[in-house]
Each structure stands twice: as C-alpha cells, then as structure tokens.
Length: 165
Image (cartoon, rainbow, N blue to C red):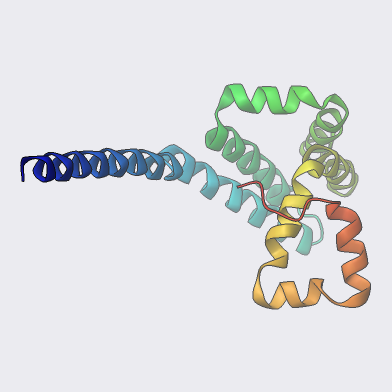
C-alpha cells in the first residue's frame, strides 16, 4: 500500500511539473502589449499605403503609411532586431528607404516603385512561408491548387512543404 501511495504522489508531482512547463510555453506564444500595438501600427501602415495608392498616389496617405509601417515593425520586433534586419540586406534597405524618401520629397509614383522593389528584396524570404499558410486556407487554398497556379506556387515555395512553426 505504501509503495502505491508513493508512486501516485510521484505521478501527481510529475504531471504538475509538466503542466508548469506547458504553461511556460503557452506564455511564450502569447504576445505582449508592445507587440500587439506594433502589429496594429503595421496594419494601419499597410491600410494607409493601400488607400494612398487607390487614391492616385496621394502623398500624405503614402507618407503616413510609411511612417506607421516602419514604426510598427520597430515596435513589434524591437529596435535592435529591426536594425539587424535592415542591415542584413543592404540592397533592399537602400531601395526601400530611397522609395520612402522619394515619397516624402513629393514623387509618390516613383517612390512607390522603388519602395516596392525594396520591399520584395527585403521580404522575399518570407513569401514561401506565406504561400504555405495560404494553401491551407479553404477558398484561397483551392485557388492555389488549380493546375496553372499550382505550378507557379510550387516553384515559388520550393521543396519545403511544411510551415516553420
């Protein structure tokens, strides 16, 4: 009887410690308030940029979109990581920041062209992950599985067929 009680107590203690470890992992997956604000700023930056393009390259909206996008990325991942990210790819950073400067100066059309090129160069490593995620969505995944589109998606994604998370 005593052996059974000791084993039951050990089992309860080990399950409690597993629960604590699982709880810590869940805490790491939850975003803090700064990251939530950063994602909101980035989203508003994309929205303002989209509106600026839709309204025939409105300089004010595009400028606000750029400011919100850059501040949102900085708030989401932190200043040090943002600096490392932009420093890692000089060509993309130079194009992106030159496009932002052209928008601020008053050449929104050319600024958005240069900025778009810089965006593609900077964030091209994220596109396969985004496409893999989109393939798992109901309506979009069906569209991406069509014969002509599937060949293009497969060539963009490459050999990886799983999400990194």
